[in-house]
Structure formats: structure tokens, C-alpha cells
Image 1 (spheres, rainbow, N blue to C red):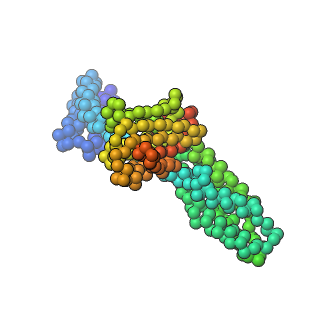
Image 2: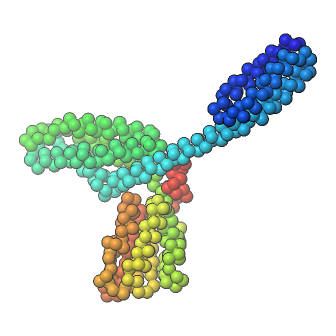
Image 3: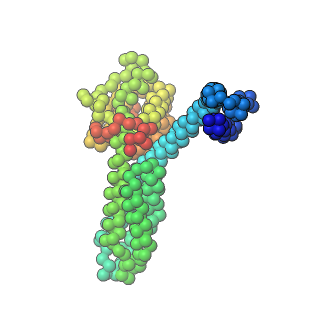
Length: 373
């Protein structure tokens, strides 16, 4: 029995020594000495005592002291690990939000009527309308060369950036891989193409047009996946900002019934609030305000338009460029804005048009995209 007790004591002493070695870096000398006490007590008890009950009692006491010594640094270690995980998660979310903003800015170049989409559609058109069996004329050869060069130098590089941003943002991996393959194949076919006047064109027109179609469809698929979740309620936000800036009775808001729920736009809420706040502040300071401010909203299938009009004291001192400067950030989301004057009534008007989010859009703001997509 004594041998068994000594074996248990030796084992506990060894375990205590290993635990103390692992915790030595985080303990002060006094705590280290206190941590060694249980192991020493266990060892001395096993050596000095020939009574199993006494040895077990001392081992229990030593284990209690060891627990009191180990638990505080262990708790600190666990807390530090939790903190490190939280920091890594926050960093991951920040990177993902940055990638999503970058993706959205690039995707705007491939919206209807945007330059990137126009280049690809022009390439699609000329490829399908070029006959490889007939020599090229001067005009057609020049048009083909210009179209191919424009795509390689412009929209092709932009699509590569879009795929990279989509992958970093954690969007649909299958679609991203499909786009990467199609881009590689498109570049290869374009590099092999030759368009010399008076000669037969070397152009795989149908294959190139097919690549373009796949790329545009994939781009639309990724964009539509993100669009409903980049959402801000324009009219409620504007109403709140007006109430904060203007006294009661100084603003007249004219909207149709239900517009409050239908003016959700595809703009990051912080950017929209900053743009509107900056505009209202400049209207107060530089807008030559001479009466009640009138706000009107018009909701279309894909566009929400807000008009802000006010009577001016001296229209010659209006500075449209300065007044509209805060709205520049909205261009990154496909927004449009302008300022005009109604000369017969001395009224200035600022019109803002923003892409509308479908009614079924998510309630998540841009900051929550990483958990919503």
C-alpha cells in the first residue's frame, strides 16, 4: 500500500511540476513558489508518512492548493484566447466589408448602360456579325481592333478585379470559379484573334460571344445577390435629419401614401446619412434660404427620386458645386444628382436619384453583409 501511495504521489508531483512549467511564464515568483508548495507537500508526505490515510489527506490538500494556484492564470489564458478570437473575427469582418464595398463599386461598371457592360456588349455584337469567310474591309477591321483592344485594356481587367473582390468577400464560390475560367478562355481567344484589312479575320466569334454571355450573366447573379442587402430607408432617414436641422414648420414633406416603406435604396446607410446631412448643412449655410423647404418623393420600379426645393434670397450667390459636394459619395452606388433653378419663382431645386431595393430586400445594413450573404 505504501508503494502504491508513493506511486500516486510521484505521479501527482510530476503532473504538478509539468503544470507549473507550462504556467511559469505567466506567474510571478511568489505565485510560482506557492504553486510549487502542493507538489512538495505531496512528495514529502509520501516519503514521511507510512499511513495511507494521512498520505491521501496531504495529497488532497496539495491538490487544493495547486488548483487555487493554477485556476487564476488558467482563467486569464482562456480569457486571452477569447479576446484573440474576437479580434480575429472583427478583423475578418472588416476585411469582408471592405471586399464587399470594392465588389459593389466594380459591379456598378457592369450595370445596364455602364461602360464595362457596353464594351462587352459591343464585343458580343461584332463577334456575332463578323463572317470569317469574307475579307475584312478597312472600317470593319478598325472596329474589330478597337473593340478587342478596349475589352482587353478595360472591362477584362475590371472583371478580374470583380472576381477577386467577390472571392475575398466570400460570395458564391462556384460562380467565382466559373468566371475565372471564362475570363482565362476569353483572354486566350482574344490574343489569338487577328483583324487585318483585306484579309480573312482570325476570330472565334461564336465562342467569344458565348464567353461574354456567361460572364455578364455571372456578374448579374453576384450583383443581385448583394444588392438587396445594401439597404437604407431614404425617406425616414431624410425626415429624421430634417427634423434635427430645421425648426417645426420650416419643412413641408409631400409624399404619396406608402412611400415610407417603398423608398429603400441600395446605398450604405452611413454614406447616405453623411451625404444628406452634408447637403442640408450647406443649404442652411450657403443656400440663401428664404422660406419653407419642400421635400417630394417619387418612387419608380428601379429608382427612388427625392426633390428638395427652397426659395432663395439671392440666386446670384448660389454655389451649386459647393452645395452638391457632399453628394459625390452617392456616385459609387449608381446615384445621380443635379441642381436646377426655377427662375420664374426664385426657387432652387436639388434632385437625387438612387437605385431602389426590391421590397423583399433584407433588413441587414451594409455592415452586416458578412453575416447575411
